[in-house]
Image (cartoon, rainbow, N blue to C red; front, side, top):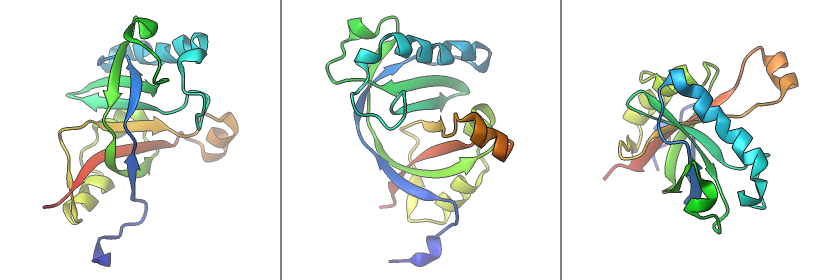
Amino acid sequence: MNSDNNHPGIVIVRLPKFKAISTEYHNSADENKLWALWGWMDEHENLLPSERPTPYGIDFVLTKNGMFSMICAVSDKATEADLAPYKCIEFVGGLYATAISHAGYCDSLTENDDNIMTWIESSNFLYDDTREIMGENINDDDEIQKGLGCYQFLKYVPIKLRS
């Protein structure tokens, strides 16, 4: 095993496949459509998985071609009709290289020249462009944000093993 590819701050995770609710893609001017999903979930908590690591469970902001989408894991029993006006999708999961960003979701997700991409170029992995780059705000806690003076945003870059 080659240990020369270690990089401080880069963590490799495997996310599971799951059923999710999706806002579909919007530009940054319509970001209120993304955040409206949380209000909808507050009213439909019965459709969320019973066990979840945060109040909303597993949720991510995805980016594709400068557009953004919000997804959140839902119960396997949730139907397309249950999730209206949102779309029901299957999140495929897979391997991701992750790192903390303090830039916020918009800047962090659209940055291409960051430490994750640089690390991937010299690693045993390749960027997997069949899946979207994602992010997750990991500190919704006001005390943590005040103490840090910023948000912490976890960026997920899809990867696959080099052949």
